[in-house]
Image (cartoon, rainbow, N blue to C red; front, side):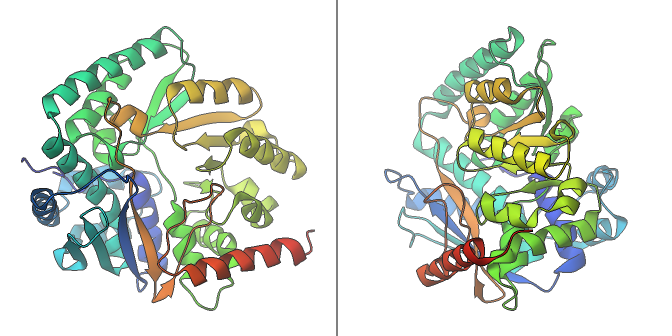
Length: 402
């Protein structure tokens, strides 16, 4: 099999956004990341696991090229000191533990500095996906079907069956293949003008290739590690610490806040007038999107901020039909945007892999996510999850709200 990840730019933009802040503020933090496949009917064979190992070794042989660093340096909020670090940075295969011990026949853990291990998540998931689909199915038949469905999507946007205003492609981690994602981004970039347009892609390599905006600010790991990786912090205030450090690094730039790491209701306790003003918007990633959107609009209005000046970015398991319905509901009341992943990059008759690579420990402390959808948390220690839930509950029921 050809090398899957061919450039270190082939990563989601939020990994660089967080990476810079980690480099400047938390370079000594250490984390453990754990792979999980949620599909009960999937089995990774010995041959697949060996190919995954080989592909990760190839990925670990990559280095940033000067022209790639020049591209990153031109991004407004990327600083020269971080570029200098990336000149020296290289993935470390020694950080990986890969075996067949997992419940689906595949176990992957990475351990090391947060600076390193954070960067591995997305390329590893892309590798696992492509190896699985190429080795388990007739890849040419899947691609034929994929191209037909992609053409239908493009037609639906061009004839305004779908109305999304601005949307971005978020499909790197669960794509059918690098070829499939490239085809999708190219086709969506070259669509005939309509009321919808492709603003960007999370894949920095493809953003550069097709002259699009590389899209991504923070992920759940940022709130989990910043808020819970220091044992002196009350984890129910994870969002405050995460937002405060983000503003220290970026000021008013690069400001889409993720709301659901320890529930949106708890997030809103810390998303006060200052943060609501400084951040240009918020991202939805779990729970009912309509309830969430209405809640955010009420929050902005309560703080006397015009919601029309803020972006609500929806990114939870979307297809174009769901996005159109959400856009029609909120248009004119706020700026609506979408991040759409698997539906664009891996839409065939074969069910996509539901795989994740999550941070499970930080500085030898358990960390966890308690999202707005039950079952999305991933932690090795159920007692810590219970402690985190109780901490949030106590705060929500006892803290005086100004």
